[in-house]
Length: 309
Ligand code: SF4
Ligand code: SF4
Image (cartoon, rainbow, N blue to C red; front, side):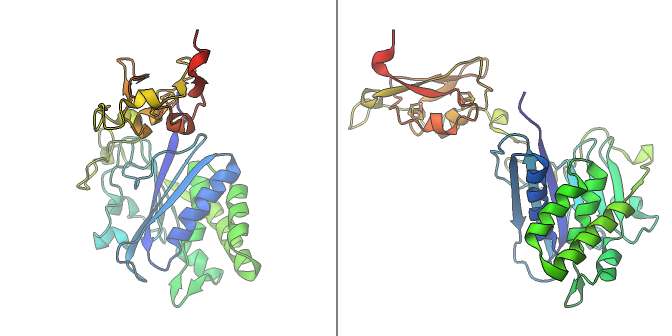
């Protein structure tokens, strides 16, 4: 069973520290023991005040997908005005049982602003803007609300401890600025509260993904239909299987069927059997060892041809 990949999406405005917070979350996750961490900023034609999005993934195993996050487990809203701007589809694709963490001055109508939610979703809020202002976290009139939201993230999800967040921020900020950020995060952790979502606000299942996209439903290679892009054939240099000195083999017991070997084989010499295991076509496998390099379970390895019984 592959380790779960936790996917979070951050919505904010340019200049609020949203991208920095998403990156700090990845570092905090690493300190927490998640060995696969990843963060991706998405700016578009970004400038101060324009909506920005950032993504953070973390897992106990290496993360091998590198797309934007379209079906998040957690959504963090750094700027509450994005709800009314209509420029960001904040709850888009949020999974059932997902978590929404919102920076808001604590007004009671936050659930009205959020609208429909996927089954079992939970909503947490904190007034990160006021906390930022209280601790002097402002640049040119904009409150840096991103970092306090890390405290709210830790409190709401329980996935990352406050200590790991503080450790990550200590590596990013130093001196007086560092102290202000750490205190703001601690305060946000303390002040984060959960709102009870009325039963009739839930949809059945996940939130739909409104983005016009080609691959949003794919979260790993296992979700892809294993169709080779091209078929190997005899070429001017002969049949590539004749080049081979070492041949790749693997143990089905250890294989997790991730299909990285299928994905990366430069000869398309790997196909997939009915049970989802890779099958190597030795007529065309040239023994390059790419499949060995990408195998996360280290079960694919090379043996010399002559070692075969
Ligand atoms: S050794 Fe190279 S050619 Fe052979 S299956 Fe692995 S990746 Fe493909
Ligand atoms: S042999 Fe390795 S890379 Fe190929 S499917 Fe199995 S675990 Fe994945």
